[in-house]
Image (tube, rainbow, N blue to C red; front, side, top):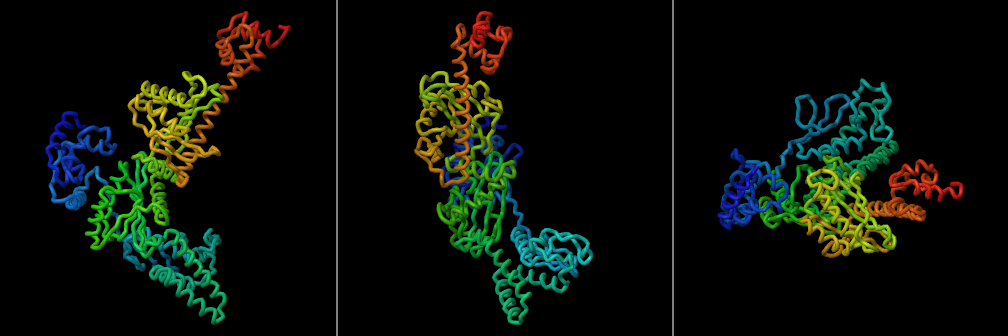
Length: 613
């Protein structure tokens, strides 16, 4: 790990760098290159690494901790620095740069050489007498083509062998849902089956448009020859082809050729998802799961540089889910690499925005699988983080609400959500001590003050008050936020703080901070999460308030007895739990209760049992 002396030494060296474009190369003690970056002004960029750690992302802190020395290369422009950086990263693959494995090998469609041929996906050509179609670059597209061909032409995808297994077992589910012609039943001849296989191959090679035209022609010919059963089968096959084409249209769009790229982040994982379109239809998709990537804008810029360094095909349009660092520079580099204009766009509304959201949801699903959450939870946290301008999705959220009745029995509730789910073991209750009457602002100030006093006392503990939240949500508007902001400043904490605003029907309407309200109604995943948090904290706070009122009412009943004050009444309730239990207690039991004396026990017994006492 880097020492303070080494940090000062590196910073001093960095401050002597020129204010000139270039590439800097970080080395560890063994001399291995651990990070390569570019800069418009080397002095400004490199010196930032060895200054205060407070503004650094965790990924940057880890990298800086292993730096032993650095070198640099001057370039004539920032664009030349970008080109050189991309080349050096590809050559050295440093540990702390975003690295993408170029796993785009070739894929094939295999048709076995047997009496009852089978169609499947294959990764390589083997000398087994089978017929191979391809090569295809996209594994996903190859698999999709095989799956579509098998479903449309009702070909089996099971492990049964024909004719050996004909008539031996019942057909599988695919036969009953009309997705398999079931050779195992013996209801289709070998000639008919081979005809289906050939049609499936033509479909794979020619695409759905060619198949539609051919099937329509065959259906007309069968009808003219009065072959109505054959015409009906062809009609069903034609409808199946069209259904598959309609399914593709779900992710089709009005832009003929583009790549759509989205990022989803979790606490310990992130994922970039790429959907590639050609002729306005999805033809490939790629997923790149990785560890934490830090600041999203910087991560997108780095990803684009890495991704198109290992891809020859660059579309004229690249659609992103958010801003990328140095996007204009990247556009210039991509344009030069592609030999034609390439534009990076960030859609805000309409069809393209919906397409981006779909890609982001797929990325969130990948993150969810690595963290044990659902895709919906990962997507909601990611969307909430972006909406509030947070650098990372909030994994640990605390929410607070005040509850009282005209200033009486003033209490507060705190609920915790971890990874998008309620963490009930971390829920807490507060009885307001310093505020008289109904003053929600002062009450909220007291509660958060006490919460962070507990943090100071338990700092370093992983559970309970010893853990700081990534986000605080208050049930209320700008007033509550303003009341609590000084508390965070008092303890020197930089925790994102927002209020949850309700409409006239007591439903979540917006989130408010220091800069006004943020509407969340149009962001469904985030809206659902915030609404559930607001409902849960309200339920928790009001439940505690009702409990306090009930105890207060019981306590008031006991204080009517001569010799029983507030303290003794609370002690009795704590010991016996209910008024009914106190009423049924014997003299010996009452006298044995904490804080009770013989005269006091006689008074309580007489109160509940009248003259018979």
